[in-house]
Image 1 (cartoon, rainbow, N blue to C red):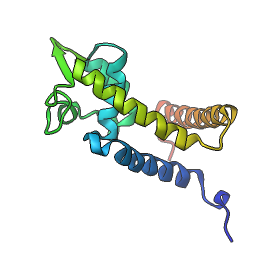
Image 2: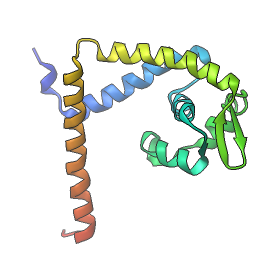
Image 3: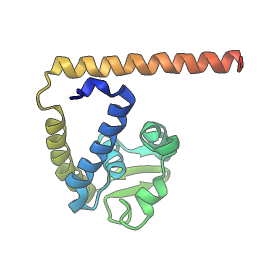
Length: 153
């Protein structure tokens, strides 16, 4: 019989990522939102932002680090097309309709987060995030060092 610790961390990170995407689809699908559009709504709920600010803030969450804002905003089902986000020069902001949609989505996302964290204490969650942060920092430093030192092979 195998235990959950028989699998490497990479397996669990990828598996969890995929499950979170699936759960977001189940949670927000009937609203016509995907995870990336949720991230845009959530970011804009705090303040008006320029496209550049949005791209920098969301880059870590998008494939290849390149936010595809045009599709999420202006494409079919996009947030601008629905009237949830409006442009003001180079800045984007939630409209009143967008704020209402954000409120509905935020409530559901909160339920999903509670589901995800069920059985964990706040301390366990904080420690998990801390550990992952240290692991990421270790690899970031190694990659920077490798790039600065050149390829030694």
